[in-house]
Figure 1 (cartoon, rainbow, N blue to C red):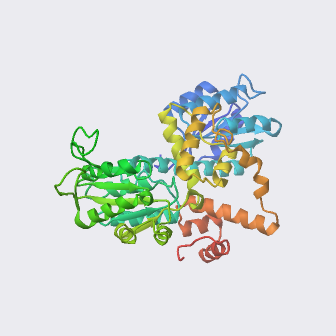
Figure 2: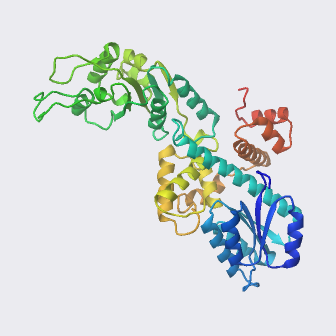
Length: 457
């Protein structure tokens, strides 16, 4: 068997249709079964990527009870398998129910062989993409940038910039809205640097009262103030040899801005109550969701400190502008929390995918992660729905955002299709053009007309 040959399981009790399907799908490695028990056995032995399942299995050949039970058994064993259910037009409600239970797609009976072949090929393509994504995520767990999940070109450009400067000791300023992943990016920078063997120390300048922040940063000697019963090392000193991440640097009080600037110039600190200068070798990474340029104009942030911190700066784009990332991240979180909470949810329903794609996510990745976590804990079905995600209002009000003219509808459909294929091909223009059935120049023109970024922009 060829390494890339599809393992296809067909669960069908009609001997004539079995023979027809085996002949029609001869390019694949086909396994034929006729009931639930033999299907479960074939799943254990062959681990098929795609299953074609007749819902009318014995002993309930005129209903769908046994077929749906078989679907549940197969997906419980291998949730990643793509199951295509076959049912008559009069049994459409059963097919819809099967989709809600985790089936990938359905094919009407009598079976149109060409249509079934197309559905199988598409299911196998999705299966391989998801398998490759899981493989990359496993590999990425030990890689510095493994925790950053993106298919967006702008976000990938940010990652490439940070990866380039990681081996150096330049100070990095990361800007972006709250919840976009600024600390995650700074951590990736640290673990990609030569300082990875030493500490990564983070402190949120907005979370600590002003009268305590100085001692948190610089430490203090015994007796420096009431309650200072022993010597305490500050965050800067703790990060010696490693990286110090100063989150929400825009909230640093003016008095500490001057002291931090002096440290950046001299690379020495004095603990509160102490007189000894202590040299510290630390890399500084800062982050803020505020406009520091505007704060300089207002006189609330020191311009000289700003340029010390901004040797290199990057801006993380908000999730709403990262094409395809909301769905990609939602699937990543689903897999993580499925494992963490011992769940076996089989993915997102169509309305959930629509809601995730259309919602603006004002809280960015953090909000998405929290919604998916809550949905996985609270979901009662086999898949996560828009209601589980608390996004059902988006579906209910979707008509307010739909295109109102034929031109708008055409442009909306074209954009959706191009974006989906670009994500599937990892942004490869040649492959995308081929899958869309157009030339590269035509695709470039279409993307520009739709206001989409291209490789040349």
